[in-house]
Length: 115
Image (cartoon, rainbow, N blue to C red; front, side, top):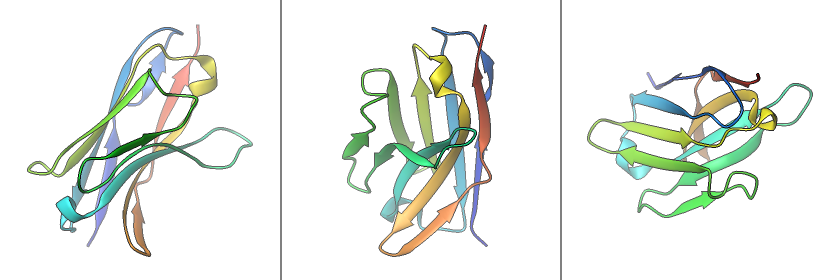
């Protein structure tokens, strides 16, 4: 059974930082591309950051220079370090594991950026 479990969300003030983690089980983690998506209220889910199985990364323009994705294949975890957070970063953040046409999602963790 595949499970992706996100953690680390919460309430943070503008300019602050949070680190999200996603623990995977039930998959051969190292062969999957791992990504973080987010969905703000009333908006579509969007890609935030991704890291391929070979380590190449991709970021949404809105988070470049502020967010960093990393993965630990031995621990089967992918993290998202979020710095200089803005109110517009408020969303539910989802972990995704993808290989070819097969993808899995976590249930999400809420990040609220507010003073």
